[in-house]
Length: 238
Image 1 (tube, helix red, strand yellow):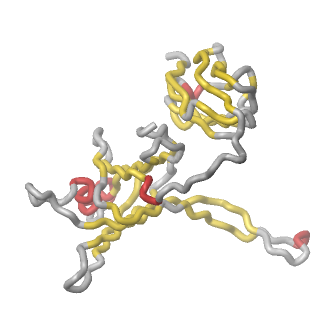
Image 2 (image 1 turned 90 degrees about the vertical axis):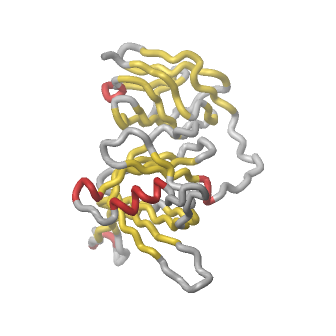
Image 3 (image 1 turned 180 degrees about the vertical axis):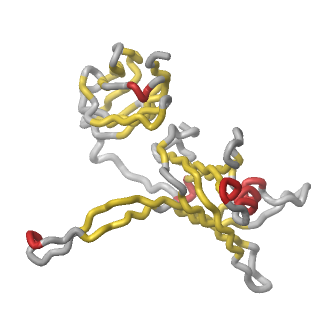
């Protein structure tokens, strides 16, 4: 195969550069250089053979070519620089912006997890003390590892006609009592508005029903512990 470009997401950014974008295509793990509008991208890293993470360089207003080396593979006028809008009115985003999907390892289709009432996808650093005399009494730490996970509160709703629980929730519940490969699920979550936050990985599952009194809804806390790397993906909603 040879290097090929099929698109870049998001396809716009400020003239100041520094924004993160994802190039899709083929053989992207062999790319040795990226330019946008003739300027070299300061950082780029292949996430896979079909996905390249790129930091945009500074540029001038207008549509620009995206070029990959070797071979000067070009996607013409694929990226548009706009003037930065530092005084732009800001509006908040909602915590419910995420779409949460799961599948069993080896399965092709994704199944959306529905009836999500709360969703938290933290990344926790492992910090090791590296204090020394040169710190003059001030402590110092180094980040040596990252651990990702998901905590989701799920309302146990059933289909009005079938009486069946949500299929996405059932994949999680089933994996929670399995071991080894059967205890893993593949998960992805992404901004439903098409924003840049979109991630995927494998995780072990715990399933903790909350119980409650006579007025309580049936709610479960599903905790997913990342197994290996959390990878950036192109947002399926983009």
